[in-house]
Image 1 (cartoon, one colour):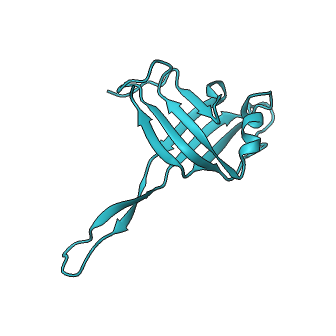
Image 2: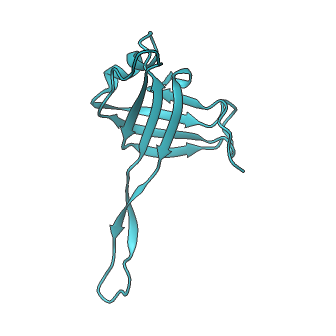
Image 3: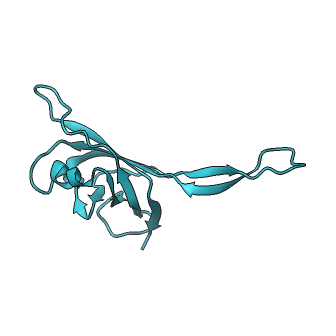
Length: 134
């Protein structure tokens, strides 16, 4: 059954940004390292380093403790991001995903046009993926 994200929870650097976030994508991947040896008849691979990406679509708010105030000091450094499908307690059907050591290379400061709400896409790369179900 698909999950309906009616009240997801997003924190960056321990600051709740759920009210500023309109979309969140967590891509978990592990580098494929080739382990093919002489005599093998097909390529073989083993898992290498994690290569995770978190993309957040957020309103471009400049109020205290919101988007710009929270993210501007993180450019060029690492932080922790947590994502959860709903605000309910952690469980197997509502896991808490954590990326520790996520790097923020770029922060779009202004991106909008007249008569619209400003939205920015913020991309964090790297970091260690963990999931908690209790």
